[in-house]
Image (cartoon, rainbow, N blue to C red; front, side, top):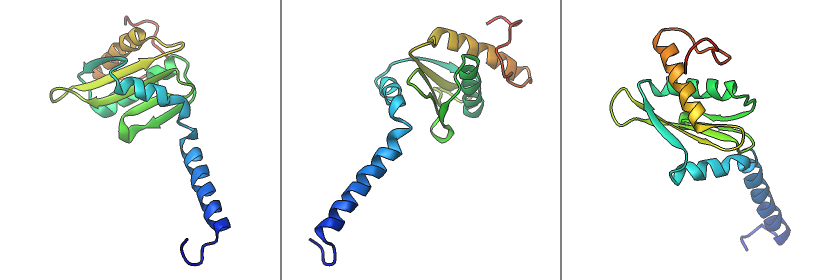
Amino acid sequence: MRAGITPVMSHAGRLLRIAAAVLATAGCAGTEPLVTSMAEGGGRTIEYPVTPGQAYDICVAILRWEGALVFNERREHGTVLVDGDSAGAFVNEGSAPGLTKVTIVARRNFSETVFHQDFRLAVQIVKSGRPIPDARPVNEAR
């Protein structure tokens, strides 16, 4: 035991560290399976001719189009995770300059195929110079 630290203080410090660790991961606990699935090669990945920033914004828009309301957004890591373990989008550098890799891991109420169809549509919108709409466009083909 270090000088000046009683067993009660040591025990209290250990409890505080445990409590801090639980609180730090509480918001991410429901999304952990999505990250694990993606790391193990799950989901569907396609490369698109957009910047990583554009890809990230498109991912957020599409998840909103699909009805997601609460996100765990980590733009600096290229991840958008829907709370409740229903979907996660991952943005990474592509295989060539000008390409960005987008992976979607979908679970309940989300479809990886529909996500990528919507992503292709959103790329066309962005490339035309228009902003990404708040709702899925109904008059444009996917």
